[in-house]
Image (cartoon, rainbow, N blue to C red; front, side):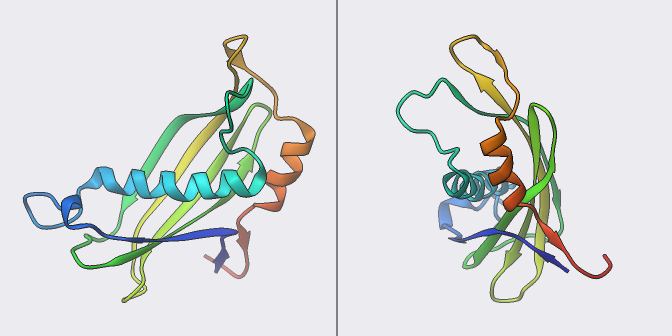
Length: 142
């Protein structure tokens, strides 16, 4: 069992459906982005004004488990999986609220970037503390 520090609920919109009547795969990435921004706000990494340093999405992976149809509400949960020197990995689980079925799992790699210098930077200690506090908790066996 895993416990994620941040979860958001997202109502599926009719316009998110593709020609086959299920949610287009690109929307899952948007839902992950919504959860990620909520996590960033919690840890003080949200975009405000024009900061010198900020996060950049370096990699995104989604493993689709089940199709999503309209109407539905999705819970997208996110937490920190790994913290490196200049980057960290976020882990996601997307679940239909009405059935509690996992519809997708995902991971993103986030790199800290200095916009004035145009290069990556090390994760500051104060941010590292907040990232550690937002780590996905695992209990039991998977």
